[in-house]
Image 1: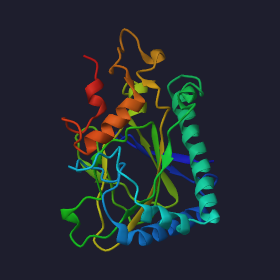
Image 2 (image 1 turned 45 degrees about the horizontal axis):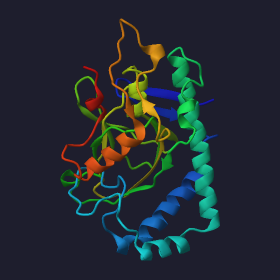
Image 3 (image 1 turned 120 degrees about the vertical axis):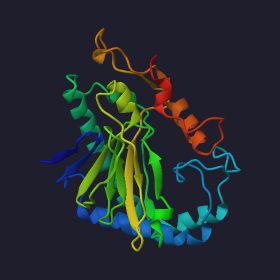
Length: 279
């Protein structure tokens, strides 16, 4: 039976003893794959599309229309064997099961049916990412990932024992480090869950600082709803004494706009759910 330990006031949990969901050989195999992947692309460094920058950058290309490089495509074909694909697919399936179990438990904790939120994931847009943070001799001059709150529903993070994840405490904004444990998942609440629960569950700001001598690997799984889903506080949680804190917004449009704002392609700062706060 898995145990969860909450980091009070932060919106992030540690989920322990999850052998069923993340067997050690699979984790080690995935970390090895990440190492090979990073080594292979060392000579192909450059700006890519997606959220890899994680802070606002003035990128000349539009991230929506950045063309793929044929050299990268060919390298990927030769780098990934059928075994490695199977390992990744198996890991993704198991960690997705965990995410949906957490979704069920959160619903029950709110006094709702366990399957209350599952209808939003008919054509889900969830994905698994491999992160590599090289060492930096002057870590105070660099951030592995800038401060942000996850846009989706739930993030399930597996990481090594190097550390670097920091969370902003909701009460006073102070940053504190999350002690690494490669035998535990870090569970992060996303913006969608914050809105659905009308702020009963909070999406914490977090960042990653780099290590001066050690590289760091992590594997976050992002549980995302369908693009066409509209996100708003659940009607069962709204009352005269507890009015909605947010206006309705479309997930797909929000996610695209937020990605574009990260690259300064919109005349605005990073788009956050604060813009949907009810008056």
